[in-house]
Structure formats: structure tokens, C-alpha cells
Length: 234
Ligand code: ATP
Image (cartoon, rainbow, N blue to C red):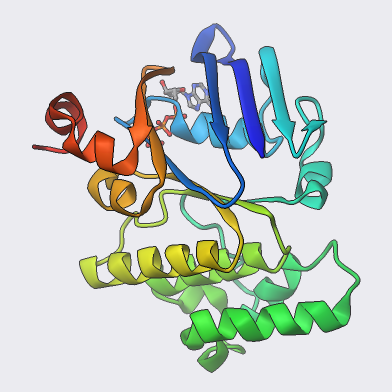
């Protein structure tokens, strides 16, 4: 579904991603793990058109999106939930959700999607008219995911969804990610919380200073001594 081939990304003279290749198949949960600064956020931003690669190609559903702009990429079916959530403060939960459907015109399908999102995140329905800025961290993460799902993506990019959340909320967010995936959305997940991410992932890639240094199924990476020592505190 998504193919990253030989992609490099630079910030001025710094090459943050060095000829990286990986793929995400339809229906999978794939996770990218690795230390701070390894380049995980950079690759997600490059996929969603917020940054440009200096080399290589990105193909989504057979279409070359390497040079496409962010709006075109959302329309093609990729939605990005950024690190730190970025919900719109000063706007209600409902207004934030409406932003997610901005590029859609199929109002009946939007209503159905909204109903499904409220089933996954009942708290959003309870707080529909509340200012998004006053939600807790976990609730903001749910809002950011709900807003993203309202664009009806085939592929959702999640950057550190567990960041700053209490353990109970982390488990809940991961349950919801699995649920969203079971309903048909392919997931590319960046996580510091590598153990939890690998448990729900079909496959994972380990990033180190802009390169992929290990790859395997979630189970294989969890069982790998090297990966345990370097990234999982094992
Ligand atoms: P984290 O989990 O800390 O966000 P990460 O794996 O997502 O880490 P990136 O944020 O992608 O890593 O950063 C990769 C490298 O690029 C780092 O060395 C970082 O310092 C550098 N970098 C990131 N953003 C910029 C920027 N805007 N300008 C210059 N360098 C940057």
C-alpha cells in the first residue's frame, strides 16, 4: 500500500534520514521504533507532504506521491496525527472534529463515521461543546485521532500517541488503535513506548540515526536480545 524507497531527508546540512526503504501493506499495523532523534517523526512528516525528500520515492496505492502537497496526500487517503496532538484550542470538540471532514462532501457518510468515532471515544460525545484546550492529555489524543479518522483515511500515521499519558490511558489508546485497524484502516505507528507498540504491531522497523538497523514481525523484534538491550530496557 505504501512504499518508501531510498528516501533521504535533510534539514540544511543535516541528513536526518539516509536512504531508508520500507513498506506498509494494506491492513497492517506497522511500527517504527528507535531512540530520540532517530528520524521517526521526520519520516512521517515526509510521507504526509510536510517535508520533502531529497532522494528516492514514496508510492501510495500505486501512485507516486513523492512531490505531492499535503492536501493532495490527505485526499489520496493518508491522515497524520502529529506528535503533541495539536488540537485547536478556542474551538469546541465538535468544531475540531468538523475540521477533519473539511475535504469531504459526503455528509451522510460523515455522520456515520462520526457515530462510529463516538462509539470508540464516548468521552468526545459527552464533551462536544467543550473547548478542546480544556481536555486532558488522553482526551486530546482521542480528539486528534477522531479528527484524523473523519477524513476517512485508508492509512493513518500516528506519531507518539502514548506520549504524556497515564498507563491506563495508554492501554486504552492502544486498544482503540487495534480496533480502528480491525475496522479497515492501515496503521503506521511511531512510538517511544516500543514494548507496547510491538505487541500490537504486525511488523516493526528499528531506526537508528536516520537508518533502519533491524526489521521483523512484532514478535520477532520483541524476542530479539539486541533490540531488547538497545531499545526495550531488557
Ligand atoms: P523524537 O522521538 O525525539 O521526536 P525522532 O526519531 O522522531 O525523535 P526526528 O524528530 O525525526 O527524530 O529527528 C531526526 C533528526 O533530525 C534529529 O537529529 C533532529 O535533531 C533533527 N531535526 C529534526 N527537526 C529538525 C529541524 N526542524 N531542523 C533541524 N534539525 C532537525
